[in-house]
Length: 473
Image (cartoon, rainbow, N blue to C red; front, side, top):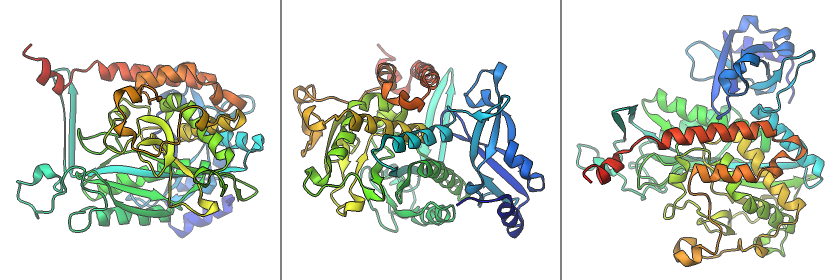
């Protein structure tokens, strides 16, 4: 699809659009927006874009921060949440010069560069991915980080801690929410509305359901799609989930671990490669019907698993989820139908076209463009260097890895236990990312420095459990 300015004006007129909202992505992966009257939209806007301050997005120092946003007409869609009829467009960013050039650190530009690198490698023409979005829907949330008061509170009437309060009697106990049915699943209709809106935004949904977390955890799994498109789709999912929750008086969070002792929220990423329209990962004679190329791709993901966490699990909260006992991976390995391994091969994906595997450690605090591009580059490094997971003690592990003794665990590589460990790994293992200039070295350095500062600040705060444990010593 390639829309023209005439197509855009026809859409604006048909929907009586009064405002156009341009969505721009910051370094962390949050959307910001800039809004113009629809009457101001013209060919000059499309060709020359709109200037903005890149320093507020984390991309440039204040002394050289002028950048230009160029709308992508193919992303035009109607915003269902605004009072004034508004259309939404994503876009790309350019650096101002004699001739403006694409800013190679901007997330949409970078992931497009990764997709081009894949095509130039000859390994495949396209990467197809499918994220699973887990999130909590609460009735209320409050939090404070004052010097003398650090606290947070979340609540939902379906949580087991409200069993003694007047209610309908259908609370869900902790870790017992998987596929919970009505009337216990009080957010089912809300998730259905989210899915219908996603379809309006050209993000088709496979299914939704209540997740393991009894305190309002849900999941929406979307259909697999092309790499760059699915990075955009990730932003769309988070936008729709959060805004529709707010519209119905609830609050949504994709935090990996908002509740102690409850199931965490991940963003498992299913993936496969295609070349000339044919599946690259399928081989009826291979382990779990996976080809040698698939195994080498897995080998690359596992070799670089620790440094990948720097982009796929880039928050301090991420590592409160990556602990044993909650179907979150901690061991670097792969297997069929094994949710305790970093890479799981779904046993139910039997057709050649759907044969794939999922990377289970990512979560939605990532910048999806950087995370998905890093996943692709790690896998390609495995293929290019023929890294075989079977020869590196990475599996296949067809048993529960949580049951390993401490001594046995020491013999198998583990994921980082903290954001600092992940950043240490990224600092020493990044050559696979910079191949073909996909990840600029400058971006990786900025990312590491930013995330180290973030981790130091958060970890310097005393916590309530520390008071409970140490106050009277």
